[in-house]
Image (cartoon, rainbow, N blue to C red; front, top):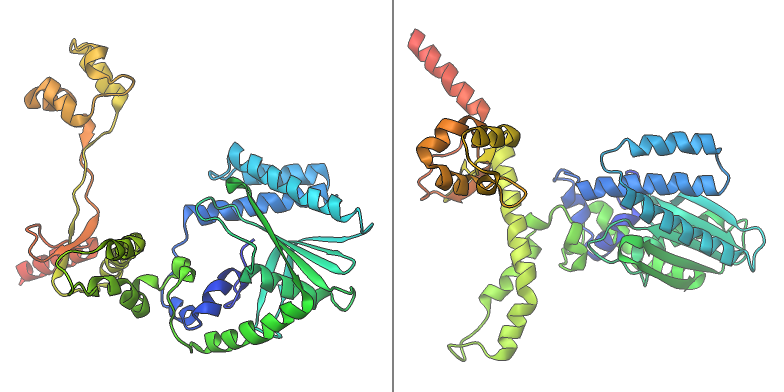
Length: 395
């Protein structure tokens, strides 16, 4: 499950270790969430219940009740069930392998682990923790399929490893920690092993100083792959300077770029385009919800596309008007509105099926002030203007 509310939690460790001040900067930006994040949360819940049932921590009746509750979600589907069962099988393969050398390992799910000896209020929740003789194991379930995650030198896993060591070292002689990523939707499974001395050295020399800076908002902003999920990315000046470096390219030696220069541009252009899109999205959100004004730009109603409101009635109406199915379908769905208008003629189109076509209000968009479209106004602004007009009329 996601780390509760730890400011410097394991899931953001790659970010706050590499760019300490970004964590406090992010607090100025809302967490919008996503369907993917909600899917991940549901999959983790299903995985937890499945593992606990397999570990005889609940009756079949209790598991069935919880499973049925999960299945009520619109995000649940058979594919999720299949991937979670595959992950659960993987976990039990690891447990059975460990039992070959340790008869009675400690197996825990959704275990809260604390590492506040190195990170202020630092804690996180590990999906699976197994303690077996001199080795601790942590397994992290990733349900995402967009970006592969590697266990090698993974700071999130290392913080879980640190927490597991600190939590159980008084009872077990833990000398090393095996860290594993299980990402079934990408068939991605990887592991990394670290000795306790190396883990504690990393915690002291890397984690502790980064955490001390991050909690105070100190240190240098740094661009890297850790920026991927940073909420402040679109407004970050360090990101701006990095992305715009390409636009300052010195081509003084020639009017044309040589192959090395083109290769350099190609290596950066995808990130530049993605970043530019994030800036546009951020600017629109600020203008729309916080009345931010950007010199030279304005909000207007975006273009919208007409759509059918009742395809069954349209088909019935046209067939009654002696049009054939071959004419109105292509091949299994209705002809598009433009094609249908061409088939019927604008007048006949409006007469027969015009009432079944609507043009939704376009979404607001930011455009240059030279755009001829009128400036967009919110419902509250329109209402305020109407009230003002009524008040002026009464006077």
